[in-house]
Length: 240
Image (cartoon, rainbow, N blue to C red; front, side):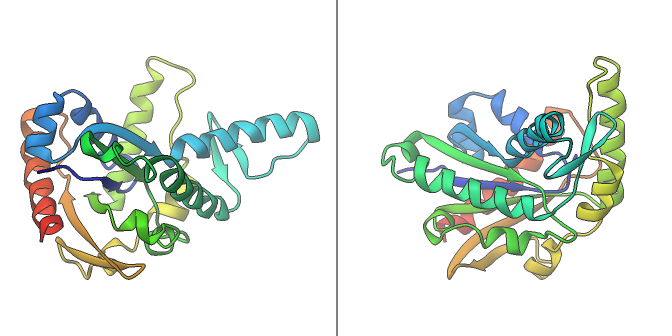
């Protein structure tokens, strides 16, 4: 009997610990990941990859047309002009899942698709999740990595400073976008401040769990038990 998630949404503010979670899962064996954390072989969809592509395309448009379409420069990063680009990205992720993964009947036997993104402010989670089809949501569970807005900003700044030590091309989410999109989010509103349960999305009951990720740690001996408790509870909800 299959004991791994088909789709696992990995949500949370920037620098909340989503990348550490993915790195942790990459660095353990397939058998341990499946047995302890209910995650199969890793396949990751991260909308930031496509967002960054749009920023780089803007660099090209600026050279050709003298203007940008979606963003403006901010040091080594970019500030988003129009939040509608986030809607575009959600629709793009949904299409990728629906066209590339759902038709593969054998894909889910050994694999888990992890769908990672952050939302908030004027582009919160609930409208973003409405871009996903019922068939996608019907095979999904949601893992929310929780930190406060203040902690998110602190980690975002600290990681940028650390990256600068090794590369002048280091970038971070700009302060303007941190305030505009991530100073608030609607997760606690959506979940009615419950730590776990179900969200009604597209007439589908989607299980969720919220994992507090403070204080910050990069120690696998600390993170492993956090992930184990949260994901096993999420699996119980999925099975129910």
